[in-house]
Image (cartoon, rainbow, N blue to C red; front, side):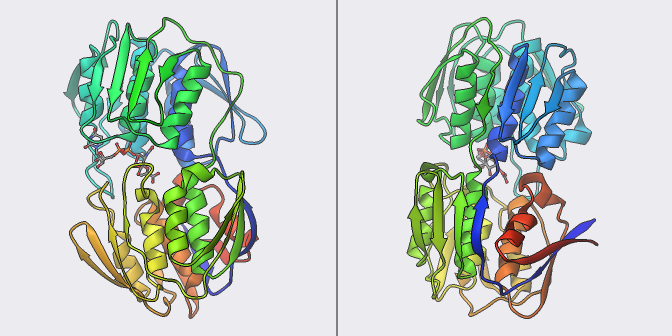
Length: 420
Ligand code: EPU
């Protein structure tokens, strides 16, 4: 199994271009099940998770062709199977995103229940309840969701908590349903908005994305989309910004959307980073002294849970104490034990972490426990003193970051991949 080795202490400098957003690409690829003909996507990141969803969809009869610049052509004319098997779903919870589109296209779906994962139990009860309201007959048998619907019917859906993939699943089920669907307390994330853009290009009648109320008027048939460019990855953007701040570097990030990262930019300014935002690029200069700042993870437009671990790494060397509250997932502090191995002073109390900044972190062998924890440990390693940090179990990283170590290398970091 590969590991990432980092010799810390180099100041990051230069320019880096963002990849397409994983969490936008996944639902949009699933949405291609909704129509016949070729859908053409661009800026699709080459990631393990994208590979996994392609594998599951290939099993159902969907065809894929790769092109230049993250181009991906998808054709669902021959789709005939309706199953997402356990072996693949267990490696990627986002496979649940196939439930809505398979029901819309084939009237049935058999999807392995995703189960828990490292960051929490992550149930899918909201997805299932909303689909039942749309007339889906649902049985949970042998670890699988068996879902059937002769016709999907529009419904009023209210989510107790805004759920990103839940909102996306219902949007995809609703676009060809009979009548109107209203999703209240919908997720407002940019990735949900990108899916709405794609569905609208397919001809859907959908409005309200980006607000907490999405209204969809079902229509009979959709058409394939000739060109859809996936939005840039805001979590990757935040990861580079935090790394630049942590190493006292000066980095320009290209292919950037200012409106997607407002909460993160504000926090980085609070810690003392200098940030200059252009329309599609941002430059960030790390502070001489990193000031502490408290964060609370929230649904968009709040501070994203997917950047909590990276921000915590930064706070480990702030001059003072900060409090980090995780409100989205119940077990998203698993990186803490690993950061402590590097000398961090962190105390956990429930969903709250008290981080007392130290002058520096020390290089150490550590273990990646989930995707964003991997990024946190790499950033910590980039700033650490005293030799080599080895980040093991790096397959998590490949699920969600495209060529991360190459991109850090281009910014002057000493980082490489080795066979463990
Ligand atoms: N929830 C329920 N029941 C449900 C659905 C959600 O209780 O049926 C709860 C969750 O347990 C959680 C909260 O609602 O406490 C919000 O979870 P959400 O459903 O929004 O998460 P998700 O859709 O499973 C997506 C991203 C995650 C990201 C979260 C939060 C994708 C493919 N995944 O997950 O991304 O952390 O939204 O923003 O879009 C990552 O990329 O590393 C990642 C984990």
